[in-house]
Length: 362
Image (cartoon, rainbow, N blue to C red; front, top):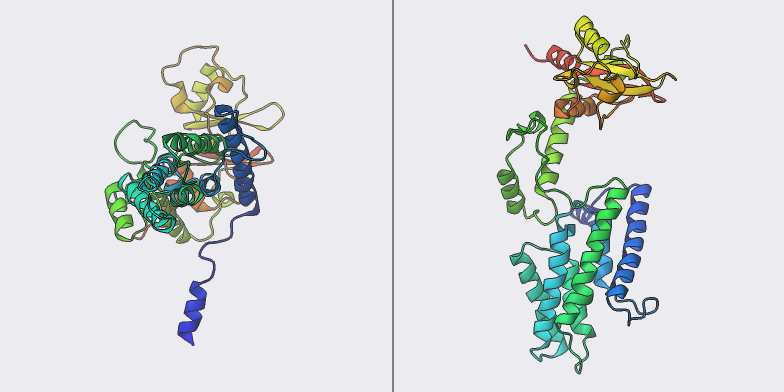
């Protein structure tokens, strides 16, 4: 009975349900991507009937799913998508010209496509469908040639990848998904502090290969997973600590038009490393870092001109794990805590160090 229960459980869903907004984002992107890809292919061959018989092929639907729904998958990356589909079409063309019956030709085309994709490190599941569909749809008196490989296969794959990049950028996702982590802000070869206890890229790659997961999970995905898990585990030892419990509330703030000499005097007098900027209407205007003043001597320079860019903020309910990630090496000396775009507190790296050191075992 237990065996049956475990077996039935193994047949159930293997992944958590995506958020509705994410599913809508992916589905809308795939629909728009396929429509625009058809238009681009039609521009390359205006003799085709774009509405009733577009130059799309069925495997493009699977490619669109990967590119728009799981853009961080190794199998969805541009190299895999474009080369995987193209080499699979080439495999089918070669097998078709060998003059074999349809069934063995279809099987051999898929086999050759898989071997070619593996050799080129371009594993893309829709490539298998490209090989199969090419063989099954070929007419004996008009076998496809290299023209078919270029249009629609390679051109359509390139179009989907380009549109996928644009859609990801427009909707706040990352595609192509970078395999290597971004260089540190310090311009050195040392990994960021929050990455120094994570195994090297070579070790992670070898682990994924040994577990036969390299086609499903990228090296950077695994590194981020380990990093997040370690941060969550470390934060759990401190209990449900939030920004509201550790933030400074009595804050020294400056106006956007505060000149450089006054800013310098504020930094010297209060010995802060960051100063919040408060707009005339009371809203949060940004942070000025002490390092932004280094080498600056223009007396007319104002706080507004020195505000940090790409600043990330928190709410009073933000958990400790997220705050650790923001301050570990994210280019911020402090995290502003906002409510309705008004500054209610500030958490600095010094605050974080004091909290963590207070909970270290003696």
